[in-house]
Amino acid sequence: MGHRFAGGERTIEHWENFLLAEVCGGEQLPDGLAHPVHLFHVPIDGAGVTIGELFDLAEAEGPDRVGLESYDWEWFEPLQENIAYRCEGQVLSAARRDDGERAWDELVFSIDLADGDRPVARVTNTWQIWRTR
Amino acid sequence: MIAVGDELPEWVMPQVRTEPMQTMAALLRDPNPVHWDRASTHSRGLDGRLINQGPINVGYLANMLMAWQGPECIQRLRTQFPDRVLDGDEVRARGVVTDVDGDSAVCDVWLERPDGSRPVVGQATIRITRS
Image 1 (cartoon, each protein chain N blue to C red):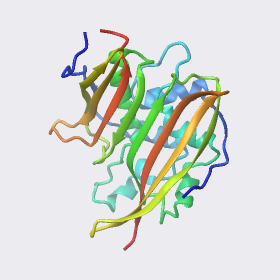
Image 2: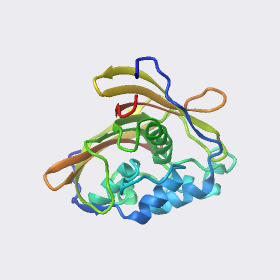
Image 3: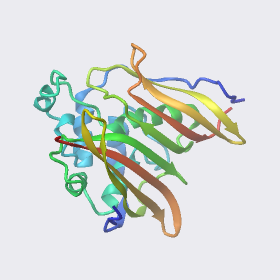
């Protein structure tokens, strides 16, 4: 808990915006607007970690031992291609859960995106790291 | 005029396919094999069906919202994932307006299978750009 990511900048390029809209089955957006679902990987990448490194940080027993609980994504302005967004974030909490049948760790992390001094977006993601009992 | 209780125009993914999951895994550098290797889901009792990434499921909800109120409308989207969406599934993104405040509206949103089950549920705040 409290682990801060290294932080850094991340630019959404046209090619990945095109592909992301395609994989989500959506239409290409006009005027360089980036598909909202970039708020999954762009903050993580921009903060200086990979998904695999997050799995390692959570001490996951394997890459298939991680599941989703929830996302809370906020856009203060639309995401755009070709802007170097500053990404800063940290782990907010990590707590052991046990419902009697299975055990897991609940990992919550949050990352802010900014364009210069202007806040652009904030993500708070909650992942489940399943544990062998 | 948008009002509480209005249903959002639904957005349909008639069949979730594996190729977009595999492209997404490459884009995300996602090492979880449940999105790209059928062998990994046999052991989970899923008959080798791949599990759609959570962000793609959120993408379906975003597509519905943008088709309704334009590409710059989404202000906040909170989602939970009570069940998995698998390749071969048909899912419909649906929603209903629960609050309106000036040029902003709050909606319950969800993905729905033909049997009525909801593998993804959430709440969206959008800026009203079209009445």
